[in-house]
Image (tube, rainbow, N blue to C red; front, top):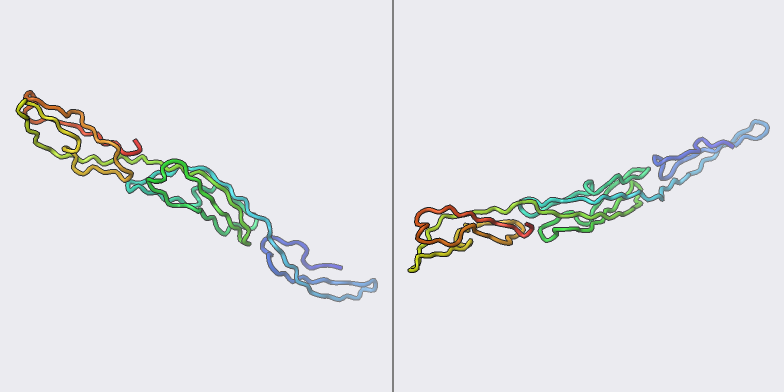
Length: 187
């Protein structure tokens, strides 16, 4: 008995027609056909890696499965890699657990998890305005950062605005350079 096909690979997943040839002791032959169903039931291997994701100036970052993938594989090929979370904002600063689902070409799946550490490295935008400060009857005036601020902003919020000089006296009459330091919620 001889089969025309005996070895199968991923390329033959599904139905395959094989021919069986039978020869008796006198050299007489006959053939029949059969369908051999090849099944892939082996899950892919999902491999994740932890990553850092940096917020942009709008306080957002989007990642893809390829960013978290660390060499996922399958002998018969990978059809898709999908993350359960791809978009992050200022509310997500710090570690965030994501799950990646890897599906092979034959519908088998495996999952892995990774930590996406969301980081804000974008400085706030400090916007100052010139002001006139009028001395009181004692020859003193105190100003606050809110007097100098002219719309400072940060996508993740402002923690503080501090002036290097807030108190003025008669000795300071005229123009005085004041520096305002704006710190966002992430330092």
